[in-house]
Length: 284
Image (cartoon, rainbow, N blue to C red; front, side, top):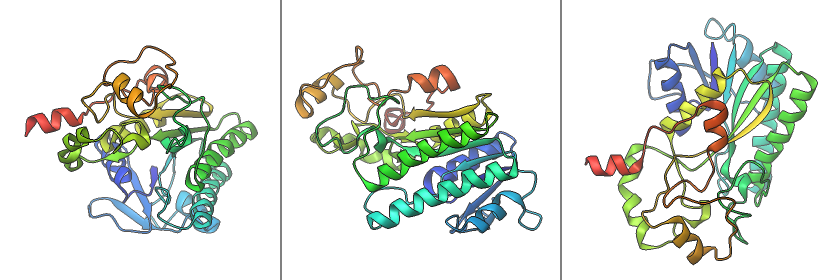
């Protein structure tokens, strides 16, 4: 049994569907029921440790013998709640899932960190390009909550060397219907500068979560997860020179590659994005 917390959210829906399509038994834990009535679901508030423990152990006959957790439940972006509520909700719920998994002997946890840890919204520009997992530059309470999750994972895995906790620094999650507006981004390089013109198709986010679950890693790990291409047709060099002049290039950059590096995820997890907004728009 795989538990997906936040399974009714954008990335959560795709993750539940992907896991089910690959033969996994899945239960979604959320405060909001899924629209897909075929999905096994239970409601729980994960900021309450007792409910988190119950969600990962046994809920009637719906949940038992949990072998892995994909923790996506969170306040999903800055500005959706006050700073202290965002930080408390995300940090406490993540702690509760990590601790419940540890106490219940669940050794396989994947969770949603965030691209914001790279420095979004880049008030002084990115540290370098492409940004990668070495960067820790939270600029908001939301981003700080995600970095705290990464640091907690390191300590949980120090306590238990057999535990695996993989954090996915997901880019801005998109569904296929969102791609209709992508061509309009060309009009203004500043419109999507806040995350270096990157995105992640929800289906590729789900692929990354599944690959992380299936990996034989031990310990705490963090991966940047984005699609292979940018949201722009203009070259990265042109965009960086216009919007973030003087940005150091860590390596030669291809014209339209993601400026969130996915090299580590490719090498370690075998992550290969399958979807592109370009294919979707072209097909219409």
